[in-house]
Length: 213
Figure 1 (cartoon, one colour):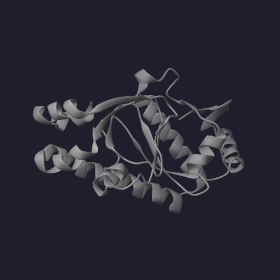
Figure 2 (cartoon, rainbow, N blue to C red):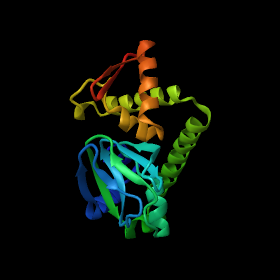
Figure 3 (spheres, rainbow, N blue to C red):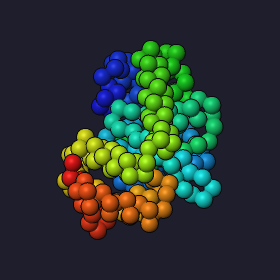
Figure 4 (cartoon, one colour):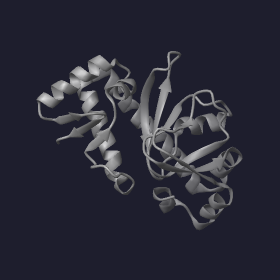
């Protein structure tokens, strides 16, 4: 672990190392899907994870991203309530996780104050990000949402530069993938991207978008 280690005592670090399972995922791998049984809580060691809601037609709505030292509030909620997953989590980049078995997640809240702080902080941060996602859908036009999403993806790559071979401003993504994440059609996204290219904000390439800002 990286960021999360800073607030954990040596005792809790030892407890985590004793029970946690380490898993690696390649970019694009589905880590957790809607309806899956949840047997462990993921904490990101490196990389990034995209967390989404899906509907009956398999359309996806981005909720938030997870980076190093962070965990998923939706998964945590399902863990504590012993419910199946209500979200889909996909590796945005090559990602390493620590999977903490379910039986320890609740017990550590009372046993380790720093774990309780970590859990509550995760709830608050993910809730704030969820509100931002709702605001984006409700109040921002699609062009702004496209540009914000591309900048977010570029930021993820910049903060994980050692894992990314391409330039941090170059985002490997198709128009269809971007449309799926924004919950709209490919035709509309392509039109908006062309408009942004005309403004000099970005440059379009085959299966890749390069930000100019």
